Length: 507
Image (cartoon, rainbow, N blue to C red):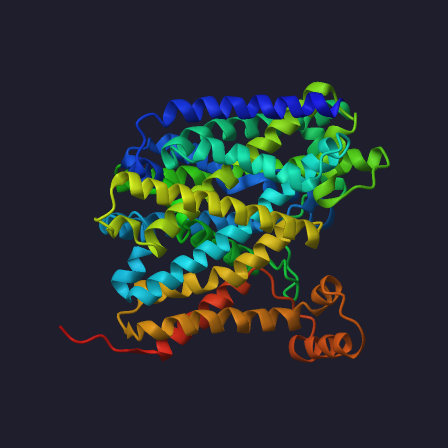
């Protein structure tokens, strides 16, 4: 199919988003941007958050994991559901009780200003890296399969996509995103279902025949019982739970949509509904991944990982309609994660770092001008980060995202856990030191434990490479740390906070 025709559908889809944004941002103000005037419909928020939670990584990377790991990613999904229970019944009641606009205000009330700023900065770092990694994945697919043949450079593609996102988010913020995310989630899920039906039809398989074929190839295996493996089922389930607690419950992007709902009860309904939908949607993505590998095996296709789905969908293996639906589904997966992140980062920087809501001397117009400046600044940062991921060029971006989360969300986990489960009072100024030391220790452990990965990525050779491998074998003896890296980081932070704390004064 002509790349120009495919790209025209991308532009048409964007124009639809722009129309929705224009309609929903009428009479929008700063409260509309930050928390949707606390008037969002919980059902719309729950459904729209499916797209934010999944993103282009799930759309492309999760199916790509089936070839090497079967359905083992579903272990993490089980953990997600456990994590959503903690978010609904531990974190949300706390946020609503304190009537927070930024969830990091909790750290200010509990510990002080230094802890508050530290938590907000770690969120900004975490979300910037995670969002731009997701953004890179989708932009790279558009580049490889559409825009390279049109002679458009990667940096131009990135600039255009970011400009499109800014155009429909800079005014309405959360108030707009609640509606655009709902539209995009619908398109993404329709794209998923159409692609599943198309590939089953292409191979002339019924649902039951597809399941039997996947079983015969050993792709339906969910639980990994090798305790030394990074994919061991207990690691994956517990790690998945903590990923949800941190990347949803302690993340301003995800929580600003939840706390934009009027009541705590409705917000809890939103989170629990989201967990049920994600449970089944992730299962469908894994099923589609299995079908893609079956099709690839039958047709001598050697692409794998993140490249498999786009290669099959866009290289004349299916009808033009399926190619268009894939592109729309992919774009629908891209925008909810990117637009929400851009809005949340703007909100957090304005509220938490600049203290915009507290500056009563500023007029509403001055606050809006500051907000827009921050919004455009983060757009530039996104642009530079996407170019950096292009330079790294990792073939499985989901692994990169989980590793980044392990490094950067740990201090947030430790701060909130210490605040909620301990009554002790910390030395607020030293919290910054603790939150910097913990990730450094974790990075050191990860470099030694996963020495082969780092040796390959950083092109380390000679005696340094040999020393790293020997040290890894001596300390870990083949044991591989996986997504529990996040928990270790949070634990180090918790211990550090305990060291700099003292018992709370008796009342």
